Image (cartoon, rainbow, N blue to C red; front, side):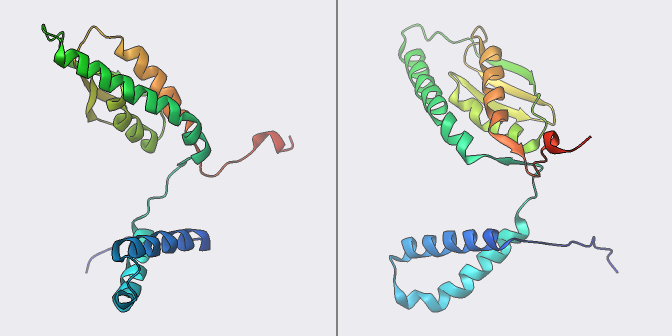
Length: 176
């Protein structure tokens, strides 16, 4: 007999409703609102919602949408600069590149932020994440002489600011 770990799941009505709205909306877009698809749609939607709830990972930190919106101009600007930089390097007659790998020690304490940072590295000029471990990131860069580390530190601070602990406890209001 297999000894399976016991799991307890608790979901809020909001989590279920949001998933239902997303799934129904997606179904409506994909089928162009075809009424004849609903006998197949309903069980499919409920199955998708159920599976998404089961696969949802409980995070110690959650992404703050307001902070993402505030930082969006920064990420768009870095993406534009990155594209222009790579274009200039590729079109330059002497192809001014000196590719290599850089190891960066991460300070973000949570996995979600580290993954977000690794994925955001490609927004920086001439860089892409090559490998992510618990507390280190290997980055491939088109030019080892660029000031990549300072830029990555700045990006890491911004990415970390996008998250907040899921169970926010206001320690200032706790009586001593």
